[in-house]
Length: 345
Image (cartoon, rainbow, N blue to C red; front, side):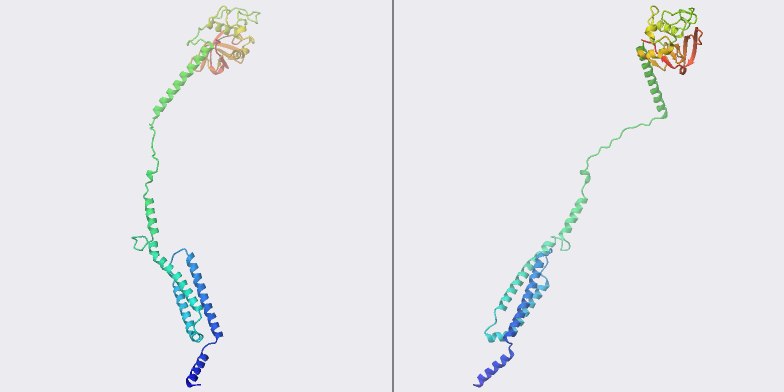
């Protein structure tokens, strides 16, 4: 063996003594592969987070650091395995494939980020704002200003204000109107009473009836004296016979007589029956006296209304007041008379 060969052999022996074993190299490659896989998994997770984010931002700084760490790790692995690759005839192809995959990942992660970052200013800022305010704020201010300047009168319906005219009325005017209303009411009441008298057949001529004892049989014997009935079929000189005479006289029926017992009070000759007879005929009765009416008393007495003075009293003419079968004339309050029977039609 020559010196050169011995020296080469020595050098190789010395080189072999410095190089790691195959087992150590496989462990080194396994560690490098695990580191590369961990780096790739971290990069993949970061890319997934970026794709689901709501705000568009630039590629974060940790991606560049990851790339530098990958490159440094690859360089360290290459430097450590350089003697073994030289002895074995070249490096394994797996690290080259991992380097290519990492470069592709970095390229796909960085390039879209650059485009998105470049597009952010145009998306975030409005033209002419100088980069100081967002376009959304300008739009809100413009819409607010427009809303505040709306003229609501143009949307509202026109309202016409109207007022009624009123005039103050003095107390004297109120009193005058009250008296006028009372006068009209009295006239209307009088007209209604006159119409009622016409319907009842009463003599509507105002004034006083003929006064005095005009009874045709003032000397005839009474019932107590054994006397009989008058031509009107009531007992002579009784109150009912005198009033029947006056009703026939006012009606102009003095012979033959129109109102006799059978046509005037068919229920009986007593004064008790006269009010019921009027109601049975449907003739008018009232609490207001009129001349020519019959004043009816519940004390079994009737009288003839001679006049109505208007002072709250009534003037009566009658026979047998006080059971004396004679003629009487007296003035009594209207309230003392229980009912007034208007002359029959």
